[in-house]
Structure formats: C-alpha cells, structure tokens
Image (tube, rainbow, N blue to C red; front, side, top):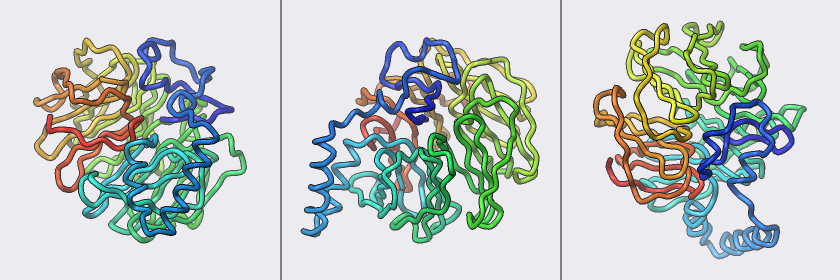
Length: 346
C-alpha cells in the first residue's frame, strides 16, 4: 500500500530487489509512492491536455485504456460484470471486458487512491491519500467526495463494507473509521494501541472481519466491527495480504516472503515454506481453487493445495503488483506499477 510523502510508512517499492530485506519500521525514510511513480511536471501537464482533447473528440475511453497500462494502479474490485481499479492522480478506471478496454470514471480528486470496495452492483467506495473517501452510486462511473479528514497527511489504505450501510476504512498510524449509515457520517475509532499502519481489511464469507498491519498486527471482529480482538502471530514484520479460505482457514502474507496458514481462525499458525524471500502484497483464490500470491517485481507464487505449499510462477510481467483480481470473465488481472495487466491462467 502507498503512503503519504510527509508521513511515509514501511511499504517498500515493489520493484526494488533490496526493499524486502530492510528492517520493518513505522517511519521509513523514503515514501513508496515516490519510488513507484515519478512523472515529470511537463508530462503531467501534457497528459491533462491530451485528456481534454480526447474528451472533446469523443475519444476519452481510448485514452483511459492507454492509462490502464501506464498508470500506477493500487487496488481493484469486481462489480457486477465489470472490474473497477483505482490509483495515482485520483484515477478510477472501469473495464467490462476483462481488461481489454477501459473507461475513466469522473472523480473529484487528484489524490492517490489506494483502496476500493463495492457493497453491491451500484454502491461503492474508494479511499486514499489526503484522508479522502469517495462514493459512487452508479457502479463506478461517477464519484463524489463523501469524507475528507482535517489532517491531509493521513492516508487511508483500504476500505471494506459488510453491506451498503456498514463499512470501515483503515490506514496510516492506526487510522480507523466506520460508518453505519452508508457513509453519510464517518466516526473515527482506535482499535489498536500502537500507531502502526493498518494495511488491509478483509471480509470473510461468514461475516468475520480481519485487519492486517505492521509489527505482526492481525485483528478480528465477529460482531460487524463493534469489537476487535488481536490475533497473536509468530511474526513481527508487516502483513499486507490476508485471505480467508474457509470458515476457520486463513492465509496471510507479507515482508520477506512470509506466508502463514491457520486452520483455527488464527488461534495457531503454521509457516508455509517459501524460498522467495521478497515482499508479498496480495493473495487471491481463483474460482478453480488455485491460489496466487504476488508483490515485488517478478514475485509470483501458486498453490494448488489450498495454500499448504507454493511453487514459483513466471508470467511475462516484470513489474510490482499491488493487487490481484479475477474478472467476471475469468481473466486474472495484476494491478500495480504497470497499471492493469492481463495474466495467463496459472
């Protein structure tokens, strides 16, 4: 996940060969977003001018498709028969054909967006830098600013909704907000004493909520987010991905190729062997049961036994991946430094 410049965090550049080996810290000196994307000012101005020209000529979707392969994207979510992706410069892109072509959503911000979630086919939320939360009521085509915190140095890193009314946004320095009215009001709470970044919030099929973060942080809620319980873990580094596999089965991944699996909801953990000691940022289980992990450049792992063992996989993608998502048509999309990339079946 990407951090703000003034208050950077521990997520290293996915494309770096040395980042995963650095010590875990809540105050990393170099913001990851600066390592991901360094567009020159002139190129940014030119892109804006090109967008305006393309829109005037009715060719905005062609430019959006080009952006999808050239823009830093950080999260994506299937919605109905589409996939919606978010990323740098406030961009929100939508595809209805498995990533072949994209259209741009209308957004009110240029802040980097780090997370997106849909409660149903129409209602969705996106979060990001500058403590911003956006909302859509039309499946991701248009967005409005629903919330913005007073401290613009804070960043949301992920968002999750149980239904169209009850949702949560997590982020830097333990930032945690909840809504019980579809985002009309957001209330800040403290769910962890330390000021570690909360990197991901995940909803399991049985309704259990999980949060993964720095310093081995894992939290669990079984009452729709009213109370949160810390899950003891044998690892003190950062967790970035958490994947519920069943009613009690969990898979988590993080720095230095760390993978743990639990059969009892996180009460006990088993380390999963992995010789690829690189950052693992995301995990997805495909509809055919195959599990894919990804993160640092060229780091792909595949499991065909429900996460008990993993083998390396080498699709033709050489850049870092922040998120993996299976499109409604079955296409596996890698979301990251190279925008949205269509991957072959693993």
